[in-house]
Amino acid sequence: MGRVLIYGDIALFGSMYIYSLVHPRPGWQYITAMLIATVGYALWFTARAQLGKSFAAQAEARELVTTGLYSKVRNPIYIFSGVGIAALCLAMRWYIVATAFVIVSSFCQWMRARTEAAVLEAKFGDAYRQYRAQTWF
Image (cartoon, rainbow, N blue to C red; front, side, top):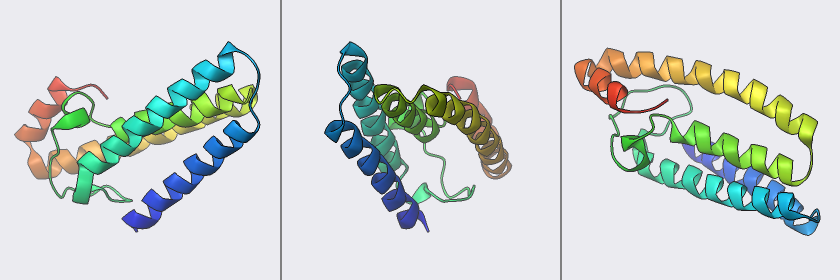
């Protein structure tokens, strides 16, 4: 299931990114948003790679990853995927879509983060609580 999600993410990002390149919008907003999207997606895929075998579609506590991007942020996949997609929507001037995406996605990712935190805390206890105290979202 994890590979399907990774390939689905790549397909979603790739198709949106290619569409954005094929149909550019003139102006500095487009260039800035495309740069932010590129950085967001690079960090998203870096976080996925750093998570390795611990990535799962549903919250599972396989191992507590605390290195790389995870040494600063508990949920970099959620943050950087959101940044990437929102930036692409802004690049294309899909302001309503970007706003709706940010609202819905933020709520969904917050709920997923809460579930994951509970699962990780149940398995790793004090080690997770210490990690959580040292990181952001």
